[in-house]
Every structure is written in structure tokens, then in C-alpha cells.
Length: 136
Image (spheres, rainbow, N blue to C red):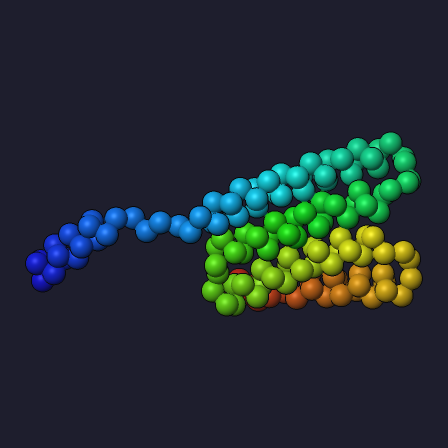
């Protein structure tokens, strides 16, 4: 038994550490950059609101939502979660992206319906989280 452990350790030392594909470091940097940009865009949004300006508000409010939604999707490519965890994370990522798109739409049926879809996605996500915590 001891020989098996030593042989396994020896073979793992020969193989060396597993190298990550080159695109992973790019995705990590991109994800980090998008998240920082989303935070900055949020600060700009709050500053814009404090200035009581009204022009271009839709674009300014959509930007942090779209950036963090895309950053979340890129982060999923890095993490490669299990299928169920991937589904949960996709729900939130898509909700943020749709919320950003909703900010860009003029008032009307499409904007209302898209906003309602976003609400349902967030309710699904939070409900799923609450139920899974209860069962843990």
C-alpha cells in the first residue's frame, strides 16, 4: 500500500502542475476589468442622479447592469461549474443583462414585459437559494 502511494506521488511530480489554457488568464483579466468597470459605472450613475440630470439616463443606468452581467458570464467560463450551479448562475447573469436592456427600452409593453421577466428570474434565483439553504 505504501509503495502505491509513493508511486503515485512520484508520477504526479514528474507530470508537473497542470497548465491552464492561455485563454483562462485573458478571461480572468477581462472578468476582473468588467467587474471594476461595472462598479465605476454604478458610481457614475449615482453621481449622475445627484446632479438631477435627465438626458442619457437610460444608457448610464444600463451600463453597470450590462457590464456585470457579461462579467458574470465570463466568470462562468473560468469556473466551469457543475450543470446545476451553471443554471443558477446563468439565471442571475441573464437577469442582469435583461435588466440592462430593459433600461434602454422606451416605456411601453416590451419594457414592462421584459421588466417582469427580470423580476421572475430574480424570484426564481432567490427562492432557489432559500430552498436549498433550508435543505442543507
